[in-house]
Length: 208
Image (cartoon, rainbow, N blue to C red; front, side, top):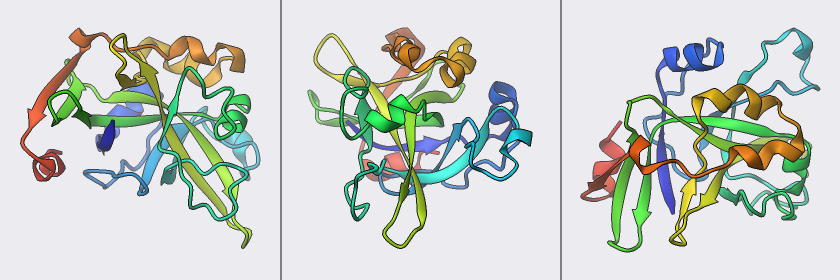
């Protein structure tokens, strides 16, 4: 469904919605397998984590690497919200509460019915807060590789949609008990999104 997305590059978006002042991503377009920025609660094993803000911006590969992976070559870009808690690939990040948010100005989806690309963004112009899961995988060489996957939700017509969080849910998404995670993962109303057909992938890559 998802080809790539446009990371939010507005510093004010991170300050206003999350209360953290970070250096926004420099990438105009991010494709699967590339390094992107995601927001999360600070890792407890980070030096001085107790003195950090409630949230931190981290850099990791878009494509979650399962803990049991031997070589890190089997990344997972999307996780179905309805089954992630029981899937072997996503079980540990879900149980550990490794929830994250990816801020995107827009995403590019493929409409299978019309075989066209759609440029999707919020009607009010604010960045999309896409729900996700992150993981830290230890390579055979001992390196810790951080990665993330985006969560998706099912629509009534058998299509799937990225799980976009409402602004009022953001604090709870990061801090809720694990058993309440699924309650925040719901389809976004069509009225809140704008979908514009795109001519080709080159046009999509230039839209930033």
